[in-house]
Length: 295
Image (tube, rainbow, N blue to C red; front, side, top):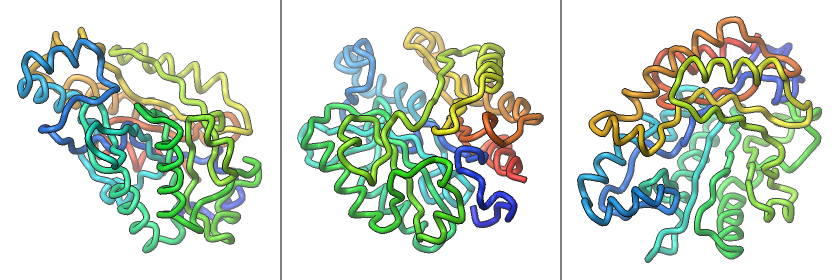
């Protein structure tokens, strides 16, 4: 964000174009672990019957990114979409997407290391799917986040004052959004209500583009972030029909080039583009296309 033109340094962050990744931690999984609590019930039943074969299928359909956190950050990703869960038999918290991925603590440390060496870069961490977690685990996760990022965490402020200059002057680099009522108890955490993320829930590219058009033309409140989800989503039935395929081949390779083309005439500013996310963000010049909108 240090390369964003000076004329945008006072622009609220919800009026800038911010590249993001969908299911950001889903770049590697533990194939030897169990199926996560976010998996469909039929998947859990099939895993008990067919074991390794189902996990291989799940791996190909759960993997949404090719790059790890450091690589995503280096490429320009600044919004991260997180699913977190407890894991039976372990005290640590884990990222997941049907299968368990990295420990949350390790992933956050990787992000913090990048921020230490890039003081003008700002990230939005959106913890929006939280599974099998009680009050203790929520407090555990929030304490971990605040301990790792420390003074870098931006407290809840009015969106109109949330701009690059304000962040840089106060040495703030991390905005933490947390989708649980516990967020309301801590002024360092932004509640889930501060972001809107309409979801097309389709495997049809044309429907997705029409859906995003409707989101774009309807605008959004000046007081919240808006995430454009440029993703196609497979149902269990779709996965079974394409059981030898993968999320990248059957969905991302269709959605991302269409999204990049859709972005061609879109602009930043009030009620326009803001956060844009997709799967497999290293393909089709997605990241550079988003960044180029900040002018």
